[in-house]
Length: 208
Image (tube, rainbow, N blue to C red; front, side):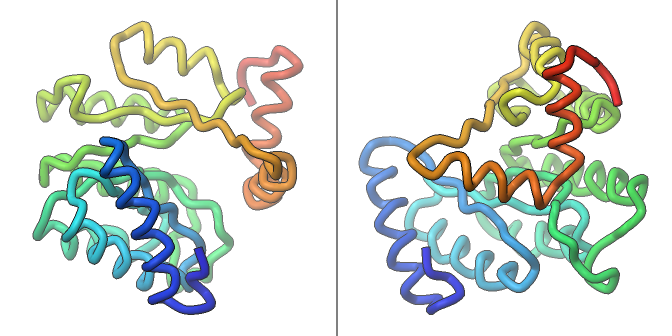
């Protein structure tokens, strides 16, 4: 979208897409890249949701130390989030490094979102985080249409089916288009653990 070239240029590009989505009754989620883009991406989201509050959402990353404050800072208007752990190799000053701490941060962020009555796409293949998410869903008495789980195609399909069979919404992430292969390779390089998990699934092994 040109964010690293010019923020106003990127805003114009994204607005065109979101405006078309609104016209069609659809929805656009603005993805989040590395921390160099976090502030500008949040600014773009703020501007976009003023005009299209029902048609735009944002991704937040649980491993960033700032995420709790970002949720609170954005709570002055309607919010729609995708919450993931985060995959970029950020400095320790910006991101939690311990896996258990990252998981605790994920649960804390999710609870903040639920407290603000936010629709959340819970993006994880971590069964422990799925358990914690289900506990919060039960605690806040949420109906299935008030949240969703999100997973990558081909990763832990058994857990995905368990959630679907239990009546939870599930969105499956499927790269497509002419450049799907280079894109998928880049994502796997960014997050080798997903590649390992997918390979084990292909070989019929259920767990790490």
